[in-house]
Image (cartoon, rainbow, N blue to C red):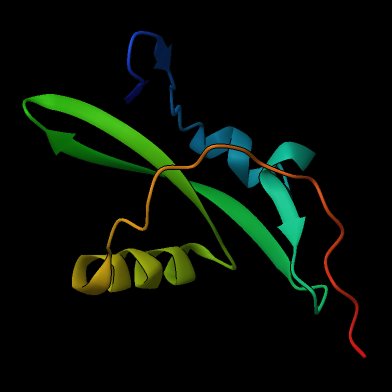
Length: 96
């Protein structure tokens, strides 16, 4: 699977090692996160075809089933909101 950006090409490889995965409890820390309720989130790769090329993106989800449900929801209602220009690091707001 390849991710392509304007003039730069970034290649993302997804390799499955079933035997290795059976002996590993968790993904590397870069692929784990948690929500405001301390529920664990996992990063999932998505792939799609457009103009004869393979493109990729990623989402965070609670499980493989949740990731599949999110993809199904995207098929029904995904829309483009606009171009991103910057990202600002910030702490999540704390409950009042």
